[in-house]
Length: 145
Image 1 (cartoon, rainbow, N blue to C red):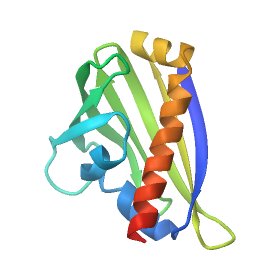
Image 2: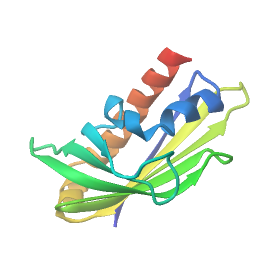
Image 3: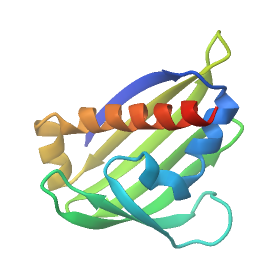
């Protein structure tokens, strides 16, 4: 199992941050390397909710990854989904916590396995991808706050 964890502070409230993070239909706007999303499960995001995310690998190949929400906790502002595609299976875990200044800190961990995950970890791309996701999410949340 390979893993990378990073955090970032956002100049927005935890509630404003959660509104963007929890709207999984918006993943292609910020979730690197997502290209587009197709919703499989109707209704609001919840545990068991599924989607297919078209993701572009570092080599330029686009894969369809089936995503399944494993945890969805609006009170704790925490969400985890598992994505699976050829060569990779991994969990994307997100938690939002308030700071003393009334803003939000986002913690993101991506851990997985498979040959694509092995290559990503070996080349240092997993950590860079986690950092880029956080920066993209921060930019989007702050633009809307």
